[in-house]
Every structure is written in C-alpha cells, then in structure tokens.
Image: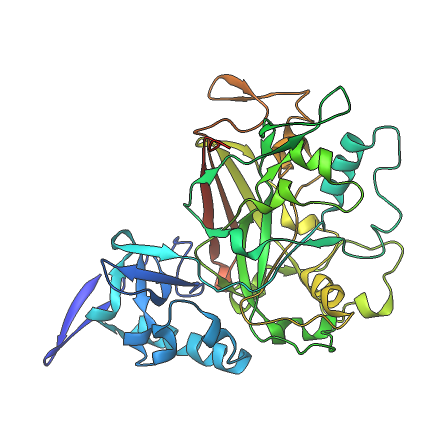
Length: 401
C-alpha cells in the first residue's frame, strides 16, 4: 500500500498482487467494523477493506447491513462497482482503507427468509441410494422441479462463528427414539444467492429476470444432524436436523464479477415446464474445496449442478411468494460424480460405512473441536481467477438439557 500526499489529504494506492483472488476485477461486498467502531459496508481488495461510506461519501453504506444498497437495483450496483474500480486505480483517501486483519466481519445482510434447495443430481442420487437402498434413488418429482424447503433465517451466522452441537430425538434400532446430542453431525457445501431487489406478493420472477433481482453469491455450509434428520424427515422433511445453524461467508461476490464463470447447464431430461426454461445460461464454473481440520477432503464442482439458480428463483416465486432485499436461497449440497467430489461427510464416508483418513485417524462425522473450512475459485475477467470468501466453523460440545 503506497501513501501519496495530496495537499492536506493523504491518499493511498492499493498494490494488489496479480495472482490475488480478490483483485480489482472481483470487489466483493461485506460488513465490517474497524476497532471499536460501528459496523458499515465495505469492499474487499486484496488484503484490505475499503470503507464505502467514507470513500464515496454516501450514507447508505454507513448501515450495518447491505440491504438498503441492494434495494437500489442493478443500475446502482453497476455505478458503484465502476466508481470503486476507478478509486482503486486512481487512489483512495487513506482514512477509507483498513487492513483485513484489523477489522471484525459481520453477517453482510439482514436475512428475512432462507430457502435451501436440493439441486445437485449427484448428491440427490447418492442420498437416495443411502436412505432408500434398493429403490430408485431419485423420487418422481426430482427431474421436474427444484426441490427445496424453508430454512430458519434466524440461525444463519457469519463465517467464523462457533457451532454448538445440536440435541434432539435420534432414531434407535428399537424403533423408538432416544434424546441427546447428534452423533452424526455433518456439513453441506453449498452456494448461496442473495436477493437484491424483492418482488411483490402475488407476483413471480421468471428465469429471464434472475439478474434483475439477485445481487450476488456467497459460500454456505448448511450444517446437518443426520441422525436427528433421519428420524424426523418423514413425511414433511427437514426440521431440527437443519435449523440449528447455517454458516454464510462474510463476502458477497456480485454476479457481474462472475460473468466469465457462466456456463450452460447440463441437459435436462425431460425438458422442464415452460416457466423453468432458461433463455440465458446461469450455470457457474466454480470449484469448491472442503478442508477438515486443515486437510483437504473434497473438491465439489458447481459446474455439474442440475438446476440453475434462475430456475430455483422462478420456482420459489411461481406461486406468488414474495421476496425481499437480503433474502437468501442456497443450492443444496454440491457434489460431483467422483468419490472425492462429494460435498457432505454423509457421502464421503458413505453413511459411515467407509471412513475417511483425516490427520492419520479414521473419521466419519464431526467430533467436538473439529473445524471445517470451505473455499471456492472461479474464472474472472481478463484471464484472472477470483475466490469466494471462505466459510468456516468449529464444533463446540452440546449444552446440557
């Protein structure tokens, strides 16, 4: 970081390595607080954070979440992005720049609603084989609609937040449940999509309207208690096995930064109903990496997802459900066809029957003290590569009940 005197003002020019995953072609948004100051909106460049309220002299960025800015819409998003790029190129006021190591990060948006989908055909097939052996892995509706469920927005937490092991009813061999801490605590490596401009109750968003309403993406770990889930999920689906915690990355990558990562979906058979058909491709060439206590255990590819986020949003709203700025919907577990591309420990250990070796020990599900970190990279503009903000969490022991 070079400092340049300009009269009484001190300006700084950020020197970002060419191979940085957070270069000027990326510019993800987050919410941060330097020292004991209030939280406000910033943009990450390299290993620094730009305070947008100071740099742009705009009070919308002095808020503790991105929601008011997101509600301003795509034209405003593009204007701010261009202005920030100009400032990075030309120099910023020194009091608007903070080292990443000197700030605290918060959940970047106020989430009103959270929906989790089940959009990976490889994950859905694997889970079908594990949960319904001897039957067709995919249920009849799976290839016709993006299956999803409503999660609990109040338990979405920012990356780095510790996760308390959940308690609940667990299925036993006797056919009746017992109660206690989950013994089969798992992860789900996912990609989340943040609503920028909402939609009114009674209206719907077609696939062509995706970029008019969605601001950007962030990594998600939807922690899952598989033993609690196995007992409760029939007939209505996930509840306590999912609602105790969902971790979200602190940085939201704008859709515009991912333009070079866009790819077509794999063929869908049978063809979806008209409201789910896409005019423009909304697949993404992202490669995730899952590390368990620092050791790489999986590299799930987002490129192989069956349902796109534009189709997820179209299905979410086709019944007239409203959306609001800051709402979150996620892809569901991202898994590929290879054994080392599975985005959950349920799949990686094949339900516990095939343990992994982590740091020299056989492992199946999470133990207290374990830490999981999920990262992702994607092609960026002008031959660069960008990285999504990591999502990480450490397991704490269950609390007494």
